[in-house]
Length: 256
Ligand SMILES: [Zn+2]
Image (cartoon, rainbow, N blue to C red; front, side, top):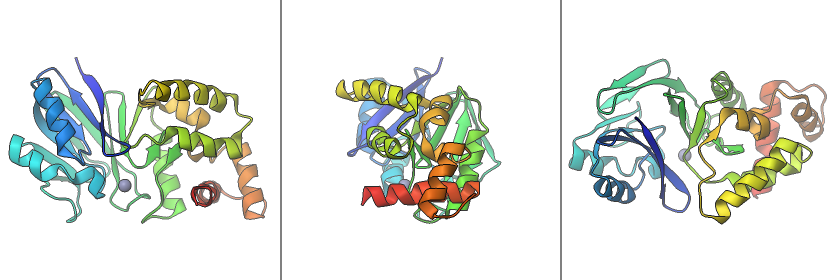
């Protein structure tokens, strides 16, 4: 049986751990300390690290973890990522024996050009591509690139559990309400997620169904978001990538 754990790290990161009671894998362990403490407390051996992209708050544990556990480190092909043992690109898959896991690799560029996501066992480990009710900033890619990445994610089953690398959900809901405030699913999500955070529980993983219903960055094919974008861009009939770009631009302006 597989157990999924979000380990808090830094201010608002999650290191996702999947384990079978003996062996574990960790996604984006930017800080090795909380992961090592968790593994020690549960007498788990780390078999592999999965990296989604090159940002330091996702890769900073690689060296120490590789040294301590001799674990495999899977990552996109980018020399800025330390201690990598296996490079991956979209369309690849990876199989581990302990724990027994199989993941498909999705290319999800946009936040960074090297960004990949891992899909398997009903989980999506999407790093900084999708957040609860939000998405990553476009530091390296453009809106069309990110929209294509989000379309690949939208094609996954609704029940997919969405494992994001940051706890940004409440702030993202505040923004979403400014452009989609009549959406009852969004208001219901706000109630549930505020209750979770008030008890210091993660809002994640969410489900893809919930993100499709509430996350404006996954709703760029919806008429309501298209109408918002037409107003924001001051031109009629924007295409999906332009609708996504308008939502992203509005969020960047809202963040200030
Ligand atoms: Zn990042």
